[in-house]
Every structure is written in structure tokens, then in C-alpha cells.
Amino acid sequence: MQEKFYVDANGKFLGTFIGREIIDENGDITIVDAEIPVGAIEVPMPPQDARQTWDGGTWVSVNEIEFYAELRKKAYPPIGDQIDAIFKGGVAFDDMQQQVQAVKVRYPKGL
Image (cartoon, rainbow, N blue to C red; front, side, top):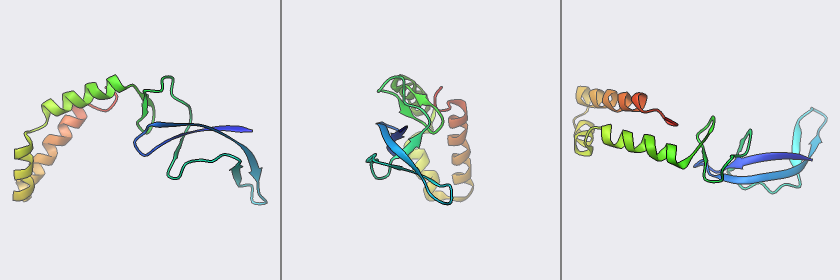
């Protein structure tokens, strides 16, 4: 029997699934007897706290997510300016992309 851990597309933990390994003639492993939800993404370990979400490389607590998200929200250019840059395109759009990317670098996920 083998345990596997899965999250949904938003990183929310779906649970631990236990199944039997079947190895075919090519050496490929298939897990059977575990009803894994459609679209589930396998992760290497379960969260330490059910309120955590998977960010693609580690488990992040809700408080950490809210923290960096709030910092980004305050630092981003006003939404009206962002829409204006999209509408204008060209240099205005490129400049806006650089401003937004600078905020993301300053306040990375999991900060």
C-alpha cells in the first residue's frame, strides 16, 4: 500500500489516498483502489495544518498568503492606471508590466 497526497488547482489539500501499486511489464507504476478526484495534483507531503495551501513548492499558511497579498495590493499601481496602460499599449503597457513585476519581486509569495 502506498499513500499519496493531493491538492486541487487552487492548492487546497484534498486528502491522503491509499492504493496498491501495480507495476506493468514496462516498469510503469499504477496506483489502484484509490479514488483520486479528477484534476487532482499530487504533492510530496501533506500539510501540517489543514488551513495551509500548496503554492507549487511548499505549504503556506493562510496568514502568510494574506500578508504578502495585502502588501502587493497596497503597492500595485491604481487599477485605473493599469487599465489605461492596457488600453494605450506600447510603451505605457511595457512600463506598467515592469511596475507590476517589481511589486511581485519586492513581495514574493510566501513572504
